[in-house]
Structures are given as C-alpha cells and as structure tokens.
Amino acid sequence: MFVKFLILFSFIGIGKCNYDENVARNLLWPLTVDAYNHGVEKCIDKTLGSSSSYEFGSQVTVQCDSHSSKDSCSGYTVAYHAQKAVFIIFRGSISDSQVEQEMNYTLSHPLLPFVGGGHVNGYFLNGYNLLWNAGLKDSFLKLKNKYPTYQIWVLGHSLGAALASVTAASLSATKLVNKNQLHLYTFGQPRVGDKAFADAYATLVPEAYRIVHHWDIIPHLPTAGFMGYTHHKSEVWYNNNMKKGDPYILCAEEESLLCSNSVLTPTMGDHGEYFGIRNYLGNHECVPSGTF
Image (tube, rainbow, N blue to C red; front, top):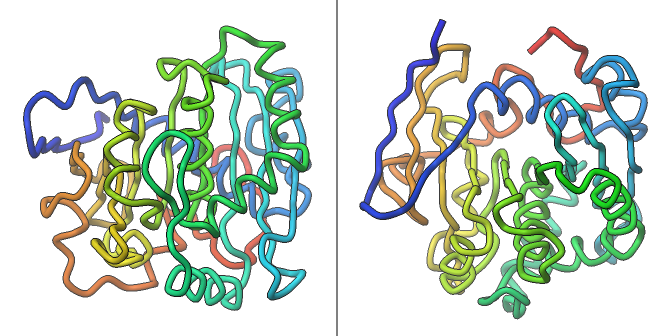
C-alpha cells in the first residue's frame, strides 16, 4: 500500500525535497534505536542481517559533561552495502539527570561560534568534538575512504539528533563530505543553534529532515527565539501514531506553524516512540529484523 502523505510548502523556491519515509521507518530509525545499546555491534546482525551486507566501524562513548561520569555521549559508524551508505549514528541521553544537565547548561551558557556560520549550543558542540576526537572521526574516514561512492547518512535521536545536526553541518563546512553526498535524518531533535546557523544549514546540508512525532516536547526546546534559538529546515511532522500508512506533513522552512509549532501543549510521552518502536533513557534492546 502506498503511503499517504501531505506535503505543505510554506514558501516557494526551497528546492527539491527527497524525504524517504520507507527508509526512515524501516532502516534509519531501527539503526538509531540500536545506538542505545552499550554493545551496538551485536545488534547490527539482527537489524541489517548477514555480516556480508555491512561493515561495522566502531562505537565511541565519552563522558560529555563534568556533572557525572554517567553523563555520556555515544555514536557509532557502519557501512551498509545494500543502501550504498556510510552511517554515523548518535545515541540520545541515557538518564533524567543528563537531560537536566543539558537544560541547565542551555539556560546558563551562551551559544558558541560554529565553523559553518552562526552559533550553536555548547553542550552539543562539546559532545560532538569529544566524540569526533575520541575515534569517531577515524572510524568514519576509514569507511568513507574505503567506499568513496557511498552516500553519507547522519542520524540521531534527542541529544543524538542534536549531535547529528552539528556533525552533518561540520562535515560539509570543513569539506570532509560533499554536501550533495550528505543526508541528515533526526528524530525528536531539539533546537541546536541560532538563526544564522539555521540559515547556513540550508546550504551546508540541503537534504536535512527533522522527524517529529505528534506532540513530542523536545523539538519545542529551547523555546524558539530564546538566545536566538531557531530550528533549521526541514521538518517532517507526523500528527498521529506513525503507523504504516499514516500521513505526514513536510514543512520546508525553519520554523512553520503548519507543523509541530502548531501544538500548544506538547508532552514528553511522544518523545520516546517513533514508528511504533519505543526507546528512551536506557532501553538497550536491539531491533530485530522484520519487527519494524
């Protein structure tokens, strides 16, 4: 059955939008859920199938704030031959305490300059830099250089979505990846930077999609305009349970009242579940093939 969908453009001239719901549902989100497993390598066989279909890079985990050694950021790399893709995938927060630290940092620290333009949240930028320098860069470049024709996909949920956003823009801004080879898909992404960062993003990463489930509260944070925080384009909003065949709205601009900004009372309940697979704050289960 063909997926029903509604695409709303808030202005003309945004360019071609190529959001792939089938790939997002059946591949990208399961791989993102796997990132919550402390030993993600053992999950990949269950999600991607035979080891001949992929090449695992590495999983890197670092302490990403000084409050607690348990407040970690994590990401992994894998090349998937069927998709001709190299993935960089980031895990979200793993405790309520870490979420609190992220919020406290955001409220008390100014945004920091970003190499590609504008300013971004320092907690997210620091997490990216720590992971990148702790081995994620080397792992990624090894796969990228081995498979130079593969597309580069950067994924993440929640905190991981913010790390993915910074990573994709950095890859483009530093010329490590051609922007036409780059795809960003995030789930439940908070606002990452200011208006100048959002404006630059459209050029840095033309294929960027922030997927939002129903009334998920995290994409509403930090509040739009606070310290200049602005979402980059484009948002894909499912105002439903995200079952197969459910419609979505694509708002191809930075902040649109046609998508999740139309929600007056967002909730936490929708944040941990996308496409019918629930995962948030410590669910370390692998996603078996055929269950999504």
